[in-house]
Length: 190
Image (cartoon, rainbow, N blue to C red; front, side):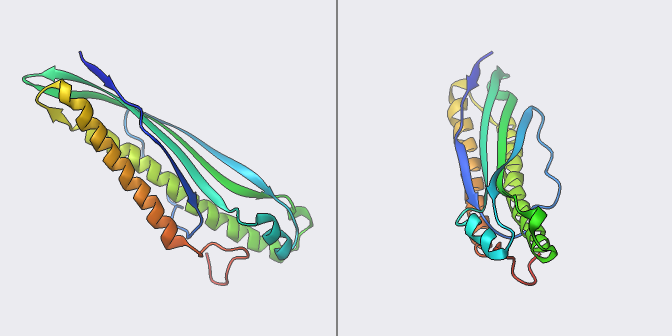
C-alpha cells in the first residue's frame, strides 16, 4: 500500500459582522475530529462609553487550523483513495465583560444583544471550517488517478482549492458584515 501524506495551511480570519451562525454546525465527515474552544479578552466599564473605550478596535475573531492526511492504493489499474483523516482546530475569541455587576439594566441589555450577534458571526466562521472539512473529505475520497505517483499532486491541488474557496467565503462574509456589529448596538440590530 502506498501511503501519501500532506500538511495543509493555517487559516486565520479576523471578523466582525452580522448574525448568520445561530444554526447547528454541520456534521463532520467520517475520519474527522474537531477541537473547538472559545477564548476571551477582558472588557471593563459599566457605561456605554467606558465599554467602548475598553473594546477599542478589538472585537471578535475566529482562528482555524485544518490538517489532513490521506491514504491511497492501486486497484484494478487505477489508484484510489482509501482513507482521509482531518484534524480541525477552531477557536473563537470574543470579549468578556467584567462590569456587568455594576451596570444598569439598559447597558446589560445592550451588551447581551451585542455579544449574541458577535458570537453568532464567529460561529458562522466556525461553520465554514466544518464545511471545508466536509468538502475536503468528499473530494479527496472521490479522487482516482492512473497510478499512485500522481495522487499526491492531485490531492494537494484539490485540497488547496477548497481551502482557498473557504478563505474567500470568510473574507466575503466579513466584508458583507462590515459595520453591522457595533458597540453600542444600533437600534433594530438583532
